[in-house]
Length: 160
Image 1 (cartoon, rainbow, N blue to C red):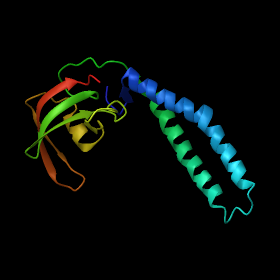
Image 2: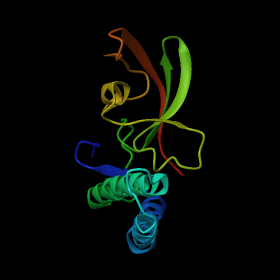
Image 3: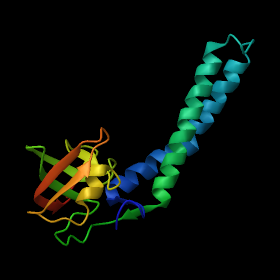
């Protein structure tokens, strides 16, 4: 499974996102509508900073709701069956441009509460590593156009 077919999430990460979604939809949405209505009643909307701020907040919240809805609908929840090859949900130790790095290939939502850097399976680095095993080398083209060589030193399933 790769992130092109959905996002892999641990059960804990899925539950956390679901709780955030439920809070936004069932509580926060009504609160912001009430806030907008109160600000609207203050008068001239052209010069009503509180009204415009509340509308901006509503737009940000609706965008987050849509993002969460999409992630939850397309999530693959559970433990990864680790084959030794890198896939979404793998913690990788690699030598990148002569520097050792440890990071998660996957979704930033599952790494919440850890100090791991996260690269999605769709990022240039993540895509180059999918299917690779320790000891293998690969390269990818960075956004600046530079080709970067990567040597996989270690790979293990994300443990939380």
